[in-house]
View 1: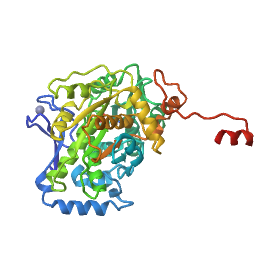
View 2 (view 1 turned 90 degrees about the vertical axis):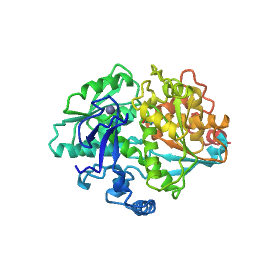
View 3 (view 1 turned 135 degrees about the vertical axis):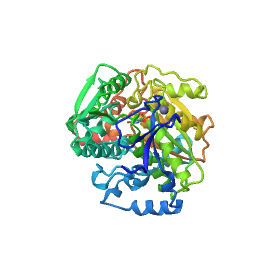
View 4 (view 1 turned 90 degrees about the horizontal axis):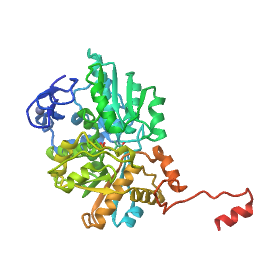
Amino acid sequence: MKEQSWLECIRGCGTRYAIDEVVYTCEKCGGLLDVVHDMRILKQHSGQDWKQLFDVRAGKRSDIYASGVWAKKEWVCPQISNDEIVSFQEGNSPLIPVPRLGQQIGLLDLWMKLCGNSHTGSFKDLGMTVLVSLVKHMIAHGSPIKAIACASTGDTSAALSAYAAAAGIPAVILLPRDKVSPEQLIQPLSNGAKVLSLDTDFDGCMRIVQELTKDPTIYLANSMNSLRMEGQKTVGIEIVQQFDWHVPDWIILPAGNLGNVSALGKGLLMMQELGLIDRLPRIACGQAQNANPFYLAFKNDFTHYQPVAAQKTMASAIQIGAPVSYERAVKIMHIFNGVVEQVSEQEIADINARADHWGLYCCPQTAVALGAAQKLVERGVIHSDERVVVISTANGLKFSQFKLSYHTEKLPNINATFKNKPVELNAKISEVMKAIE
Ligand SMILES: *Cc1c(COP(=O)(O)O)cnc(C)c1O
Ligand SMILES: [Zn+2]
């Protein structure tokens, strides 16, 4: 492939690899790798040119530009040919105002970016289209890859299974047993992936998949693989574009393995460098108190970092104690004057129910971000008149069991303050009238 982008060590040791090489970390110093683009090529167009191009493509319905990710193809993966792209028209997700919820938590200009409105129901689709497309390209060009593997808290595996199935490439999924929702378990099974349910947690699955993918015929799809980051970074670009290229004051998201926050920052920085925007938003991450290594590190200004053993949390997709993209994320937090807030299980359950009460259907991870927003407003870090965007990372339909348990008071140690139980009646008009009075 022509050298319009390549992989480069994030620790600045200078090591580079081709974009389609099977390598996940720097062989010289062990650092993670990032995709780096030749900015001289991209700077041949002005910021205004890019905005115009992206706005034209935002109206497309059928070609690859109908995907929000591939609408930014030159910034994501310029070298791949269009017929190698595996896409479910991911991206272009709604950005909606949520004034009633905003009022409740003290924000006058609150928005949600609904990344769960996507083929497999989470933002993981944004990255997976890039990774699987490139693997398809590698195989077509003689690479010995026979399968793609990942460890997952449920959404990465759903995305990988679907995209790999569409590309005709076998997928191997390592899941922590009983720690993903039933919907997340059935997604890869339905798509024909080999699903291995391991008697461990996510961090345990991650260690094994890293061993497994030392075999060059099995390709690693976890977010330490920087190809996914290229697709995920379009979320921030899309948000700004949806505001007619105006930058919000805050973007808030739930954080687990720290790939998404790193990607968000990367996309926004690219916009700044290429002259599409002249200021940056601040970034806030929410973590579950039961799995909070990033919060603890933030508390001492990122001078000291210690992985933790993640405890059980309802926000199961972020039940991660040893985030792989820690180094990347810290860089982003420094640049974006970022903050991290933690949210308890009771707070997750309550804010989830309250958000749903205003017509949303949030996943528990999104509730963590909303809970963080609320606490940051209460602490005066976020001001009530600032424009705040909360990234909703998955579709609440993947977590209906959790919601049902809440409303029927079956969640252990949780007060279902905002419960709404079904009323059981005899099939008689008089009883129905009385019940709705
Ligand atoms: C993966 C995931 C996250 C966390 O993203 P990271 O990149 O691991 O920090 C949050 N919410 C949902 C629904 C997810 O699937
Ligand atoms: Zn290096």
